[in-house]
Length: 254
Length: 239
Image (cartoon, one colour):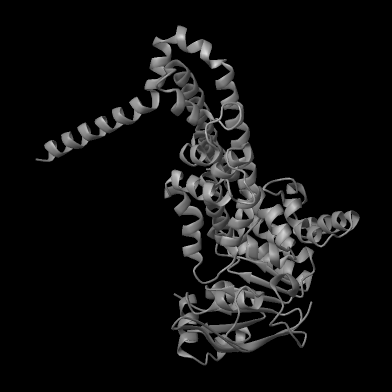
């Protein structure tokens, strides 16, 4: 009985591993077997354009997430108020589970044609759409680490020595959270790079203007599959690199 | 250094009364140990004096002036927690100079004070080390030097000997007392082991269930314990 259960668990685990790894790496296999067709597409102006827009917009999203997320994580860590956990759920958890296309639709209605601040189908729209979906990763990483620092009581000691919020944040909390903030930045950037739904609805798919790698893959997957494969390879490789840097950062802290 | 007076301090957590009308007077330069079993309210008392916890009632006076509404950073009270709380990313020198740097003290004053404190706690040769490279006793001395460098009016120590291994404890205890006597620090020190409390305190305040049950010199406590809990604590020293 026990051995049958062990066998079932083993089979289930192997099937799950195959399912996940195939989805993650099959695109590399396709690229290798179709290398002659895929290779020239890496340098096609459309892929490079989507890459530039995606990388730069995601980088801006990462920086904005740091600028906004760090003070907000500090606020969540050091201020106690009613409905704090509800606010945290709304700000950190909900955006990660909210359907991105819905977010795109909300921004389209709020900041699209007909709104006084119409930024739909522009580079700014790419940033706004990606920011909503990605910034919670930064807040989550920062708040988790800030709470660890607080649990050690270092804030009390610093304050007993005369430190105000500025000293506490820039001399103690941020230096002790550098690796976590870097990891949060990597994850935010990778999430922004892969974001499709909100960007597609709010920024559209305008080559060399709002088209990013995921929307390029979506729009050419039927008509230009080799271009789609090249773009997907670029996006996935960048994600893996971001994940590796995140792992390294977390490991070094441990 | 200044005197400290606690007047009817009360603090409750939901239904638990952690501090029950605690009153205590500590003279300038006096070393008072607050002793009692785990959960008796010792750490709550220290955190209330520090300003990290707001009391439900009562007043705290430093040299006769009420400090109830002052935030931690304005109280001028030095604090050394149980694990010493050294900033792990800063060297010994940077840890000690922290309080002076946040107060924008001139560079030469910072250097002079840090050198003086390093000599004072006998750690000059370790000035550039990180806390992770120090022993428990060395970390304790860095934490004391850091707290004393800003010339606090009162010094609060929370279980300063609990992270010290038994082999070096007696030596660390003697050294701790000598440093604080020389610094003329008005000190409130929380300790749960009677041996350490009797070795360190000018006076000992025994706490039980949020109340101070007796405050006396070590010899008077030994001679005349007024409470069954005090008798029990003293008895553990001779087991």
